[in-house]
Structure formats: structure tokens, C-alpha cells
Image (cartoon, rainbow, N blue to C red; front, side):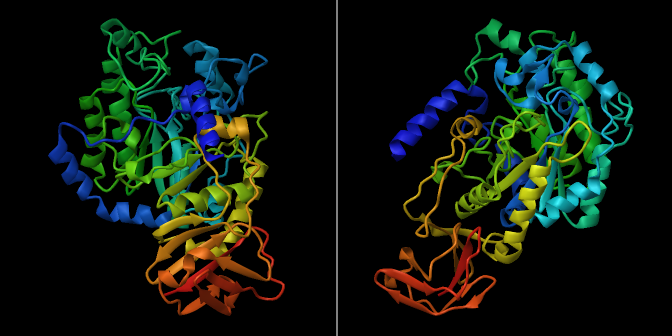
Length: 489
């Protein structure tokens, strides 16, 4: 069965190339000593990141207005990728026509404090938002470009400043997403013609994928970098001090020096910031195994890592996609990822009016309630010698697979995930227990167990044998979304 699942996942990735796994993250060939020194100086941020586990991603921009539909046609009827923030690319919308959306961008329901409070009560420790996505539109007051929320829209409020201030007030860490390579407004053709003309190869199925080849801006790509991308990154770093992340995206067709420039610009202004693998050419401080992808081979990951996930099947708001991740599914993603030593950053896509979809709010509130009781088994933990036991196996190979297959998995009372903190090991279940639970990995060969506790319910009776650990459950103990057994050795 597992073999069939992997074959299915491979087929879906091949047929949904936008969701394919990025090239393996390898160390850079040049500037290596400089990069190592800079990366080593970020030890405090990296350690904080590894202990924080759960964050909020926010994709928001002009694309939230059409919400996955252009001139009456759904994005799923257009070329891939079928994710709402790519509507300009999918529908080949001319730059001037797309820019007219700005005059209708007036998100009167936007409330930065409410979004940050949602993140905090959901158990998230950091927030990262798209300051400029591939469409080139900035959600902050940019002096570099007038294609921004202050100059081009009737809203005239600096969205990034408001979220940054709200995070600082609430005690959450903050980071910015910036599309450094792709910019359909000002990025020319993203070097697509140059790569095709010279016959250059990159680690992707098509050297023109993601590039604006239908209506490229008249400037060169180098001019875009020098006059917009580099200056806007510097602008963000000076405008928002003491950040934790710069989340670059899609580095296709960037050469080594261009990626290095994006790394050094950040380091020179805020040296503590972690930079995502998608800066390109191996210069990231942490790895992204793929969108909605949980890695199977952890030996491939030599850096701290984070899986990023959508709430439905789109990052930007899609008005017709109602395939929302349930609390049960979100907890699976979080627990599976944390048991393997990674972080999970879950996305919300606000509407064109600035509101968060009610399904995201309700489901995150349930996740937060679970973490209020069981978060000890998540935050500050490390990967144990065993990540999971039990009969149910789930392979998550990306957005395309999740959209095609959905999530119908039913876990059993024999399925447990494991994390470790000091002398404690946590066994995490996603279902309500019976009168007792048997955890096979905690047999007598693993070492003598001193105490056993159910988080939120207290210490319980237990028996350790060659068959495992038998835990007696408290009378009437039926938590809907699972529970945690805390074992002291």
C-alpha cells in the first residue's frame, strides 16, 4: 500500500509541476566561508526557530479580489498552478489591466490585532506575511515603487506596519515574505528568453515557468533587481527592525551572485534574520521541503526545516475552494512534522475585504484549545529515536496530492507519534482512547519508566513489559482530538 501511495504521489507531482519539490538544498560553491560565518552568527535565532514549531503564513494582495476567478472563468480551467495568487499568470492578464485591481482594493474588514490574536490563541509563535508577491504589488508604503497599498489604492493604510506593530504588542515574532525573483509588474520576463536563447538548464521542467512572457515590462531583469528588488528588501529591513525571517520565494533563473546579494543585503542590516532556502543557490539558513509536503527521508535535510501549508488548496483567497483542513487534519500535520524535527507554518488567505475566512478562525481555535492542554509535547521538543508507531501511514507529497486525494484518514488507538524534551518522552495520539492504551515502543528494552502522566489529567497507573507500556486511562477520559502520554525515564 505504501508503495502505491508513493507512486501516486510521484504521478501527481509530475502532473502538477508548480508543486514539485525544489532542488535539494546544498551548500554554496562560492562565498562559502563568508556564508558559514554569517550563518553561524544566527545561532540564537536558529535555536529559537527549532523550539517554536508553529507559525502563521499570510498570503494577501490584489489577487484576493478576483478570488480565483477571472472574467467568469475559474483558475482551475486555466494553466497551472491553480492557486489564486497566480491568477495573473494563469489568465495571462496584461500588467496595466491587472494593476486596475488596486483601485478596488479597500479591505475595510482588515484588523491586524484580531489576526495576531488568532495566531496567538491558536498556539502559533510567529507570523510571516507577503509584503510583495509575484504580481509586484506591495502591501506596505514603499518609496521605491508606487505600485503599493498607499499610493495605488483607496485603502491607504500600511498593512505590514499594522501587523508588525500588533505582533510586537502581542509578543509574537515577525517575518516578511518577499518575491525576489518573480515580479510580473516590473521584472521583465524573469530572464526566460535569455535562458532559452543560451540553452541554459535549471532544475525545473520549463525555464519559462512563472515568468511574465505574455506582457513583460520593458526594462531588463538586472534593472529590476537594482531599481526595485534590492532596494525594497533594504527598505523592509530598515522599516521593520528585529525581525526573525525573510522568506524569499521561487529562485528559478537567479544566478549565484544574485542570490548572494539577497543574502548579504539582509545580513548587513539585520544579521540575526533567518533566510529561507528559496533564496536560491544553497544560501538559505533553513530548508523548505515543499509546499504541503512532509519529507519522508529526513537524511536529506541538513539544516533546520519548515513545511508550509495551505488551509484549503490555495494560498491566496479562493472564493470557491471549500476544501478546508479540519482541526483533526491540522493537528496531524503539526504532530507529524514536529515528531520529525520540523516546523509547520500554516497559511491563511484573507478576503478582498480583509476578513479571515470563518473556517480558518473556527478550526484554528480548536487547535489552540488542544495546544493549551498538550503544547508541552510540541514546543521546545526534539525528534526522538522513533517518530511514529502504529498501522496508519500517511504520505504527504505536496499541494497537488492533497487536492486530488483529500484527507480521509482515520487513525487508530495504536497510532502514536513521539517527541522528546530532556528526560521526558511524549507519545501523542489523535483519537480518544479506550480504558487503556498500549504503546509498544516503550517496552522493557527501552529503559525503565519512572512515571506516566496524561497531560491535562495527571499521573496514571501503568505497567511496563516486553510488549510495551500499558497505560490506564482516567474514568470518562474521552478527548475528541486525542491526548498525550508523558513518560519519565
